[in-house]
Length: 64
Length: 248
Image (cartoon, rainbow over all chains, first blue to last red; front, side):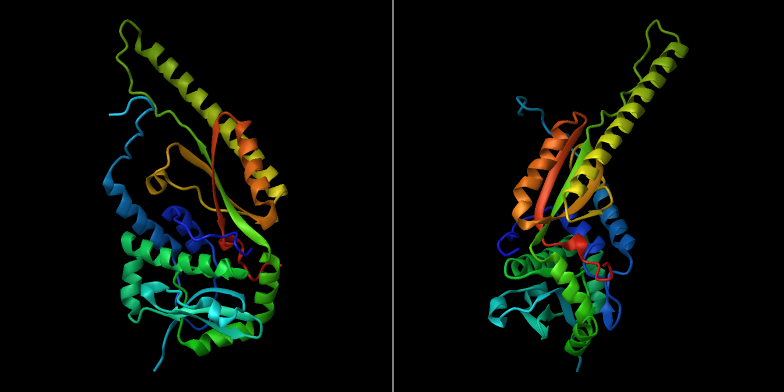
């Protein structure tokens, strides 16, 4: 895969899908693991929802 | 004295010089712990585990940790085949990581063989929903007529939804058939993604690196045939969604 996966900016939500729902998950000599995925999701949602409704994108040709 | 280690990924062991200067969580220097030809990519873990736990519950800190983890994985993935680890996987010390590599060597070798020469592509399908209209004042019409029109509208929306879901399934099946692996993530709530419309499919496909362009074009072509759906392709990613070492 050399060269195919470049470092670049990615959407946080896509990254968290992969880093929390995906990735090698092991037990053993761990001191910390994201055992409870939902906990992180719930705190994420709680953090984001109070911002309020998403602004609709401005339709083309009607720039403010 | 224990020195906890944050594990980013395992990969085919690298020339240690290949990791020179790479910085991970909180700027910690990244290094490799190798066992035979398999290496774990690690750094010192943040010393205060309780503080790290608290940080993962705060969006800005969670984002910083996730991006640091991803930056290391993406950098290593340009040099060798990797199997990324889940966010915030921390071992007590280097010995714990060495034990892991020794105990699971065969599994990691098989996993890395399977992932060699592949990348992950994300495919998200969206349905553009028109939000339900505010009930208009019904001049002249009876309440019953209004309810009838309303339920007809609801029925149409349900039908459109089912058609879109069936189309998404067809696309997912076709893409899965031309990929080496398929994995489904939960659809993303619009509040998290900020994307317009409703995310009806959030899938990842494992694709041979030399078929990347072809596969992306296939995803776009299949979606172009379905007027109800919009596609967003992300990646190429390191194979985050295909790392189960227990899978054959």
